[in-house]
Image (cartoon, rainbow, N blue to C red; front, side, top):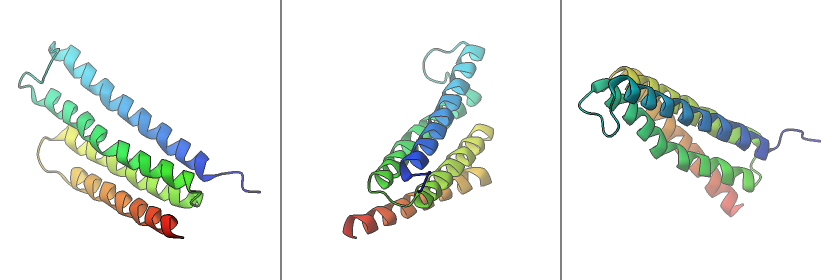
Length: 133
């Protein structure tokens, strides 16, 4: 009997991504309070970076979580869900760290976007496979 299902794997990665989004959101709030800025970034680089780190995560995570959820729905092996979730999560953390440290190009940002795209490709291929099998 398989105790870990693809649904459990999807729940794990969805939960972790939600906490990542929450942490990035809290960093924006902290910068807003620190600099007393209610709207926009007021030209403050640290606030702009925090806003973009959160914004970029909110741009990429939802599609990845949809893919993870659909992999679970089609009963893909838990390993496939874990691979997609781990690569996406690692990529999003790396990208957020890189963007939070520097507004310009950085190795963590490059690694982060590459891992995110790898997760998208992996999940996309897996979803197409399960759509026709």
